[in-house]
Image: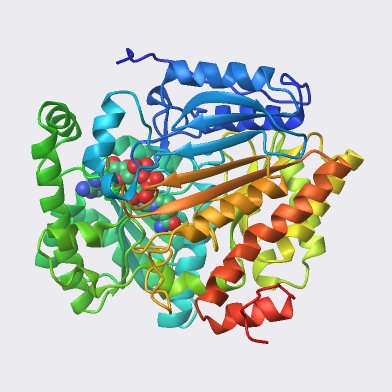
Length: 554
Ligand code: NAD
């Protein structure tokens, strides 16, 4: 195994090209951005977010990827196999410059035990979703999805606002760190339990979290006061969720809303068992990983049991995409799935229209480029009130991490329209350098994940993973700049397969054609997947937009 190297990544900025074309330069800058200390959770280990979600397999592979991207011609394609550059092929100018396959295992071998064996031998890497596919933009990447989830929950349960409510959650990591801001953006109070104080501090520094305390009673007192006054407030509470939730039950506290975003998808690296300090946990993880996993799973069962009790007492409870219900069920908590996942509960209607976490980043590093695109979006989509409200709020509340970027849930039709607008702005010099456009793998038509994005599909097709594969293939032939196919993101090994897509708007006519194709097929696959499963809204969208589905009855 390679010795750990403490390295600090510095990204390129500005308009000077280092690679042989802007697409290669974009892949390089986005890889470096994923590992920028402002962006990544543990860059020294190449870990970007989500437990051990990495950008490259090891530092040797990282260096080789950087070197290859710098040398890559405009008619060549680099292949990445689980974070290692394995080949460069002559292809053509419109082909993707990089094709990525991360963490894929033949289904009967697709579990953490086998993955860890390969990982130890240096043969594999966990790519999570946007970590290994180089389009992570810090906590902002999830914040609008989290905001939309809480907004829809507020509409369904509390008349449209979280004002005068307390949300209890845990986990303030790369993704989970968006929760407190999303709750306060919906005017609510949030208590977020986090076992690692450095994570709490990081969220305070980046303004995702307001205050912190080590004291449970103090957290409750602050929360009650804010709830009474109808004031938005987020509180980071240092503690272990598997200990804090049962304590809160003993104290007779029931939150209005309850969820969790610890990295429960990975019992060895993502979840800290009850009763352990971080150092003790790190020691046990190294010395006796089997015991660690056993204790971690037992704690998750305790954690879910407490969530079920709070749900019975009236808390609106949902799973936030970390597979904690599955672990609890495997540990004997028979009714672990009594609370729903967030997608069937709040997000699926958006997927039916091809809406999902669309994002763009300014390769120049200049925040002014993002501001100009914000303004163009506000002009172009001025009739979409919800969207304009989001952009204004994001401008005010979200601080950038690494390359300036913006997230915004756009659907079928609008993404292609917006892609052209951005490309025109690059062409005219209104923005100073090319813009990278991409999305999370957690999108309308790019993921099969039966405990999350495809939970409870209308036709029972939850586990069918042909869809993300078709998504990756059509985006690759359409000319996306880099395309990725991963396994195990979000919910862990064996539970998901998903595809990523990134496309560069470099202002050229060729890019305009590619953008039109890819930003149509990509959200289009979301509409098609849901129409095929029988969702009325998706069928209506497909018909209205003239999507050609040979077996959709007209
Ligand atoms: P992360 O690994 O960066 O952060 C997890 C955090 O949980 C860490 O800060 C860790 O200290 C904390 N934690 C672990 N055990 C704890 C315990 N027992 N009590 C309190 N805190 C504890 O992960 P992330 O990127 O924030 O993702 C969190 C989870 O959400 C992952 O399982 C991920 O796959 C999932 N996820 C959900 C979505 C979504 O849209 N809902 C999207 C991406 C990821």
